Length: 120
Image (cartoon, rainbow, N blue to C red):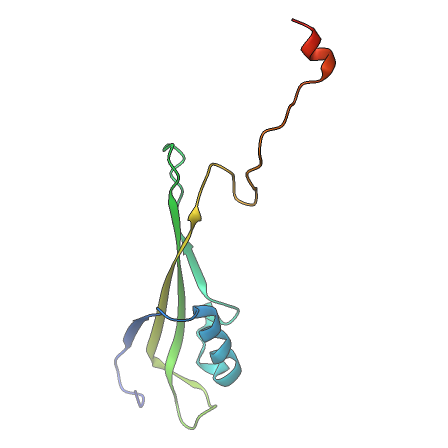
Protein backbone atom coordinates (compact mmCIF):
# COMPACT_ATOMS: atom_id res chain seq x y z
CA UNK A 1 0.00 0.00 0.00
CA UNK A 2 2.85 2.38 0.88
CA UNK A 3 0.50 5.37 1.46
CA UNK A 4 -0.80 5.26 -2.11
CA UNK A 5 -4.48 5.55 -2.89
CA UNK A 6 -6.43 2.36 -3.18
CA UNK A 7 -8.04 -0.36 -1.16
CA UNK A 8 -8.41 -4.09 -1.64
CA UNK A 9 -10.32 -6.87 0.06
CA UNK A 10 -9.53 -10.53 -0.55
CA UNK A 11 -11.85 -13.31 0.68
CA UNK A 12 -11.03 -16.91 1.53
CA UNK A 13 -13.37 -19.75 2.47
CA UNK A 14 -12.31 -21.66 5.59
CA UNK A 15 -13.06 -25.32 4.82
CA UNK A 16 -10.64 -27.03 7.19
CA UNK A 17 -10.39 -26.36 10.92
CA UNK A 18 -12.31 -23.53 12.53
CA UNK A 19 -12.35 -19.82 11.98
CA UNK A 20 -12.11 -19.38 15.77
CA UNK A 21 -8.72 -21.16 15.71
CA UNK A 22 -7.58 -18.77 12.99
CA UNK A 23 -8.74 -15.80 15.10
CA UNK A 24 -6.86 -17.18 18.10
CA UNK A 25 -3.70 -17.48 16.02
CA UNK A 26 -3.99 -13.86 14.81
CA UNK A 27 -4.62 -12.71 18.39
CA UNK A 28 -1.46 -14.48 19.52
CA UNK A 29 0.89 -13.66 16.63
CA UNK A 30 -0.52 -10.54 14.89
CA UNK A 31 -3.00 -8.75 17.21
CA UNK A 32 -2.49 -5.40 15.48
CA UNK A 33 -3.71 -6.87 12.17
CA UNK A 34 -7.16 -7.70 13.60
CA UNK A 35 -9.80 -5.20 12.49
CA UNK A 36 -11.75 -3.32 15.16
CA UNK A 37 -14.85 -5.44 14.40
CA UNK A 38 -12.97 -8.69 15.03
CA UNK A 39 -10.73 -7.85 17.99
CA UNK A 40 -12.92 -9.77 20.46
CA UNK A 41 -13.93 -12.60 18.14
CA UNK A 42 -15.41 -13.52 14.79
CA UNK A 43 -18.58 -11.93 13.43
CA UNK A 44 -21.54 -14.33 13.20
CA UNK A 45 -24.54 -14.08 10.90
CA UNK A 46 -27.33 -16.58 11.63
CA UNK A 47 -30.06 -17.55 9.18
CA UNK A 48 -33.57 -16.77 10.38
CA UNK A 49 -35.83 -19.71 11.25
CA UNK A 50 -39.01 -20.16 9.27
CA UNK A 51 -41.52 -20.88 12.06
CA UNK A 52 -44.32 -21.55 9.56
CA UNK A 53 -42.99 -24.86 8.21
CA UNK A 54 -43.71 -28.15 9.94
CA UNK A 55 -40.62 -30.10 8.87
CA UNK A 56 -37.21 -29.73 10.56
CA UNK A 57 -34.89 -27.25 8.88
CA UNK A 58 -31.14 -26.95 8.90
CA UNK A 59 -29.93 -23.65 10.28
CA UNK A 60 -26.65 -22.20 9.07
CA UNK A 61 -24.30 -19.70 10.65
CA UNK A 62 -21.85 -17.74 8.56
CA UNK A 63 -18.75 -16.69 10.47
CA UNK A 64 -16.45 -13.91 9.27
CA UNK A 65 -12.96 -12.88 10.35
CA UNK A 66 -11.47 -9.70 8.86
CA UNK A 67 -7.81 -8.80 9.28
CA UNK A 68 -5.40 -6.37 7.68
CA UNK A 69 -2.94 -7.98 5.30
CA UNK A 70 0.18 -5.93 6.03
CA UNK A 71 2.03 -3.87 8.59
CA UNK A 72 2.98 -0.29 7.70
CA UNK A 73 6.62 -0.98 8.41
CA UNK A 74 8.27 -3.72 10.39
CA UNK A 75 6.36 -6.73 11.70
CA UNK A 76 4.55 -5.82 14.90
CA UNK A 77 4.09 -2.16 13.94
CA UNK A 78 0.83 -0.47 13.07
CA UNK A 79 -1.46 -2.09 10.52
CA UNK A 80 -1.57 -0.84 6.94
CA UNK A 81 -5.30 -0.25 6.43
CA UNK A 82 -5.18 -0.53 2.63
CA UNK A 83 -5.75 -4.27 2.25
CA UNK A 84 -8.12 -6.49 4.20
CA UNK A 85 -8.32 -10.25 4.21
CA UNK A 86 -11.73 -11.76 4.85
CA UNK A 87 -12.05 -15.36 6.02
CA UNK A 88 -15.52 -16.88 5.75
CA UNK A 89 -16.84 -20.15 7.19
CA UNK A 90 -20.38 -21.49 6.89
CA UNK A 91 -21.45 -23.90 9.60
CA UNK A 92 -24.63 -25.98 9.36
CA UNK A 93 -26.35 -26.47 12.71
CA UNK A 94 -28.32 -29.54 13.74
CA UNK A 95 -31.85 -29.86 12.40
CA UNK A 96 -34.40 -28.09 14.53
CA UNK A 97 -37.22 -30.12 16.01
CA UNK A 98 -39.51 -27.39 17.26
CA UNK A 99 -37.68 -26.79 20.53
CA UNK A 100 -36.76 -23.15 21.05
CA UNK A 101 -33.17 -21.95 21.27
CA UNK A 102 -31.67 -22.96 24.58
CA UNK A 103 -34.33 -25.61 25.12
CA UNK A 104 -34.13 -29.38 24.67
CA UNK A 105 -36.86 -31.71 23.47
CA UNK A 106 -38.04 -34.22 26.11
CA UNK A 107 -40.48 -37.10 26.03
CA UNK A 108 -44.01 -36.21 27.15
CA UNK A 109 -44.96 -37.26 30.66
CA UNK A 110 -48.30 -37.87 32.31
CA UNK A 111 -49.48 -34.42 33.33
CA UNK A 112 -52.70 -35.55 35.02
CA UNK A 113 -53.08 -36.71 38.59
CA UNK A 114 -54.96 -39.73 39.87
CA UNK A 115 -57.74 -37.45 41.12
CA UNK A 116 -58.22 -35.94 37.66
CA UNK A 117 -58.23 -39.39 36.03
CA UNK A 118 -61.09 -40.55 38.29
CA UNK A 119 -63.26 -37.63 37.18
CA UNK A 120 -64.98 -37.77 33.91
